[in-house]
Image 1: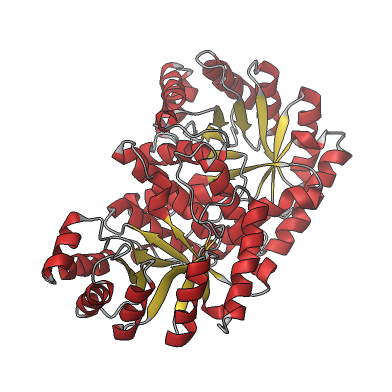
Image 2: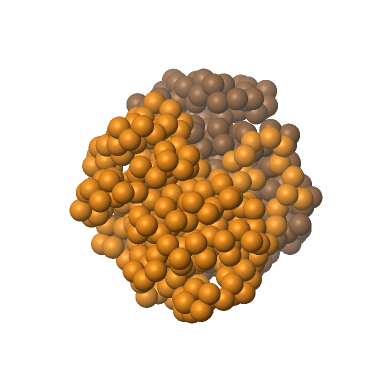
Length: 263
Length: 263
């Protein structure tokens, strides 16, 4: 399981300010801290970037890759920002991401083939709603896969995101249990070892005591890992959660276990 | 997932001494602490009880049930001790357990039908060795199930223990990954929702730093829960591990999640 830091977000006021001021220092510090904590890749969540999208994403990507060689997940719904980020990205790039929404199919998906990049496909309806059950998720996975093939993209480039449900939803635990089954079924369904990603922070959105949120994060993560999740997008500065991620990898990687491999 | 305390063990010198002296106080205190911590059942691990097996097991069972109404797992390889314990047990009783070892088939398995008790079947060869791979485990599960039927026992009484492997074994992580798959396959293989149990403490036997042991315990437990484990036998006084067990139940129980349900 590859650990992707979700810490670099424009919704963080310090990051928003740094982007507006074109001040690289806070971004560099955060990225270095994520790599030190054990991140294998960095998600750059720039939001929609309604103002100067190309300039700001270029600044973000160049700032991040000035301090790390880790792969970068370029995380925006703005196709101009995405194209600009991909153009300047010298690290390995992953497009985060597309869905069956027509404007994403038209403007985001083609960037994967054009830039020879991996791309995340969200298991969402074309109107961006979350499917209600396992059967619908499977149907959407097939459509996402077909969309990639239709866009001339090698399906090996696709990473499917089943969209972890907030526990606060009335059927949150049911949906998240179904997602575990889906992760196990997808390779058989699509006929190849398709990769998958889950956004762990989504599990605990909404108001709740911090320690309980962390506990649920640490508990659901091994369930995802045991179900074959390829990438986890998570807050890598949650110390116990990243310990758990590393312990998951020690348990699922096969080979000889070593206590010394643990944090 | 039903949480069974493995804390009451004759290998604990205080418990050994209490049994020899027929002093119920330390046993009662321990059982009350386990119930307070969240145990749903108590395993009474008396060891082989080479001296006065009936008398000592009777003392143990009577002492435990004097302070709790929880189900009792009677955990001994000594058939005389097992029969004595079952005879005096007024709480719900589970026999822990039998295997394909001839003397267990002859002397332990028949006690289940005779005492109308659930019984744990260990996935071990008749010589008590651990099977090397998933295929052998499946074959033994079928034999264990057939042995129950042959003994006139309702298969619904059987609880299968796949024997969690110590991480210290060269193939420990591989075996434990196979056990997760086995837990998911067993109901289909045997054609009914057979119950399963795992001894979590076995994962971390051998020398290793305590905090790392606990981390692995907390990480493997959700994997077991997500794979459908029915009972976990664990040290319920490991505070963070029992928190994780409760969080597993909150995630897998279905229904509406409540943050207030968490420890």
